[in-house]
Amino acid sequence: MSHHKFYELSDMLGENDLLVLNNTKVIPARFYAKTENGKEIEILLVSSVSPDNLTWKILASPRKHLHAVETLRATSLSISVIDPETIKFNSHQDLEIILNQVGKMPLPPYIKRESEEIDVDRYQTVFAKEPGAVAAPTASLHFTEELLNKIQNKGVEVLYVTLHVGPGTFLPIRADDIREHKLIPERYYIDKETWDKILNAKKNKKRIIACGTTTVRTLEYVAISNKLSGLNGLYITPGFDFQVVNALVTNFHLPKTSLLVLISTFIGGENVRKIYEEAIKEKYRFFSYGDVMFVDNHKNS
View (cartoon, helix red, strand yellow):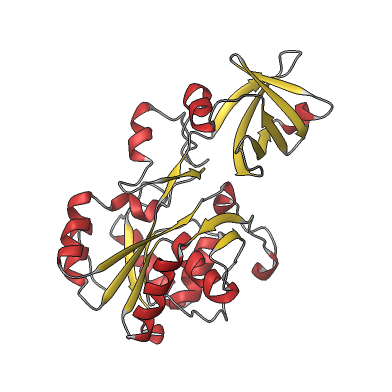
């Protein structure tokens, strides 16, 4: 165990490494709408369920106001309520245009403030490309373009996958048996050329480094399912056999979350306890805008 600044990550990587990043882009997925009788409802988009990207599964608060409601209004925008978990934007405009008008960045619930203008940039990775996430792949927030260039100049191959992070990433585990917890499936995509490069790197004994738990779940799910796109609800618990990932860059996570279970599965619960004790002692920052760790699972190397 050693302590570093994040820009020193380039010193830990070399030409026998392959770094995989999640290039999802966070959309301003939180907004307020009103019912016909003036009741205000906070809406958080969860996942798109239509080809035109205008029908979405949602989380609503308070949800009770959506029962027996047919339409909502956000500024001049009309929204049809299909059921208490699904809405449709009544517009011919692109969703990005709609959300830029009414939406706010969906900061995690433990950040006890409204999103601000600075969050538009701060809650987005420098390589964000594919719109659709309602939460950032936060381990990747640490990267700058300069650091990525430095890493690539050392001969490290950098590849991108897409998993649109949903609000399920924040849901605490409430079951007494952690294996009974369920993840809300999230949409993912890897192009065939990228996947072939990853398989070839594994064949040539390269170290596959995933940045973020979302990247881990994407790579491991494709290895299991042999599907390059679709919905991914993979929940990694102790006993899971990692087929792709050898090392992981990840933030420090909340207790009782699927994220912490994944890390414990990857390097062992006792190692996680030691790392977290050290992080607390050294006053590291936790959660989305917090500090980060780089762990190497030699069993998978």
